[in-house]
Image 1: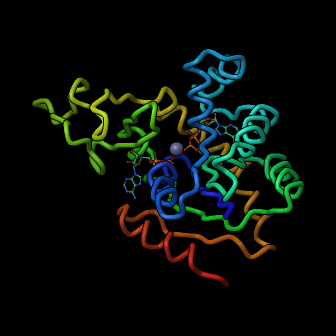
Image 2: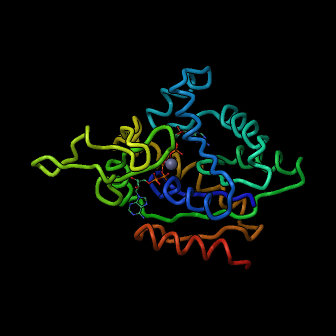
Image 3: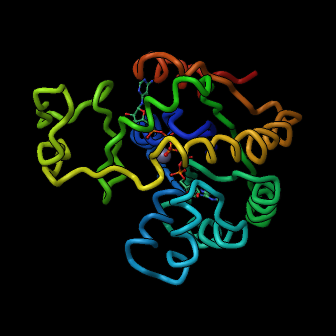
Length: 228
Ligand code: AP5
Ligand code: ZN
């Protein structure tokens, strides 16, 4: 199983991916999480990526292809994996096909999470994440158990803690309205066109992701089962 979880910023890739992980027992590989880890660790890759990411631009194909090439060689990927945020450009899609072909495999399914641009700003600006696990929360749609609101109904930052570890949550540097505009522009210009690359194989499944999380999950389950 080699799955691509496809969709715009805030579509729910990071929310639904872990459920597929649990269901199929294959790891979710998020290039965004990997790049953020590289930035935190201050590696060469992190230094190159930091400013681009903060502004909502795309990191170079060369860097992300290199990251994925190394990651899919690891032992936990031998039964397959879920790609989140990769491929994002046509050269990335072609490079992926080539890497997989060398191993005698190919992309099994592309699950597209469809959400209108208009709902994404609220999702993105209300998001808090647990950095080390990549878990996403939302002040309105998925609040952490510890969340307390101030008198204006705004979450008190010190009370934003991960449900599992109790560690503090944080907001992403690129989760601003301005960076989102740029990310969405990139999504429409560079990323949407790669669906055409996969359509001839009949492996693209589109899901209405502008619904509550549990309904999105039900549709994903259905899309995973459907053969045609
Ligand atoms: P990346 O981390 O991949 O960010 P993204 O694609 O912009 O996607 P997000 O993580 O914002 O969205 P998501 O779909 O995971 O949403 P989530 O589930 O958290 O990339 C970041 C940056 O890294 C890029 O901009 C680029 O610079 C670089 N990069 C990464 N990969 C690259 C590549 N291949 N090539 C070049 N550069 C690359 O949900 C969002 C919020 O909504 C959460 O708060 C969640 O709780 C809430 N939510 C989720 N589902 C629902 C629902 N159904 N209803 C209500 N709320 C919901
Ligand atoms: Zn994500």
